[in-house]
Length: 193
Image 1 (cartoon, rainbow, N blue to C red):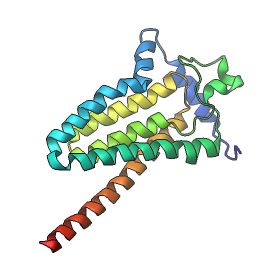
Image 2 (image 1 turned 60 degrees about the vertical axis):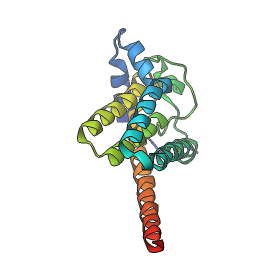
Image 3 (image 1 turned 45 degrees about the vertical axis):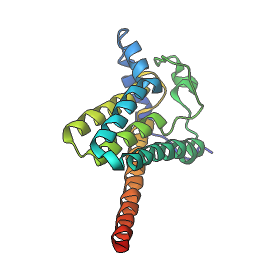
């Protein structure tokens, strides 16, 4: 059902960015691209939230898990399965020109679920902790994770850019719903006193 034509500059930019590789950087980017690499940071963030938010931490962590689950599932069902844009490694016309560090994975790549989840996580921390220093670090991390997906050959730049934007929108939506429900709960508690 591939009803959209993705611009040629996206493929050219992919080949340029993917071609900027060094042997010493390959294992670093492969590691950075791996979901296993994220687990220690998730644990650290969960601890930070519990330390900072105390009683509210259970609800906040539930919002984070829900946000990432929604972002991850919708990135597949609303985008990958609808737009059916092949990953770079599945395109014969660029297979010999690109640098692929991992197996190809799924057939479709628009939007990048890694980028969506990383930016959802970054936006969550920004909204939850309200710390500029932390926000800069976490958005830099999300950008690096996203770039690593181009570097290893899994995604085109537009896959990553649109995935990042989608992750931010999903997180903002879930966070606003959470704040609304929290306000309503506090009002009910005050009425009952």
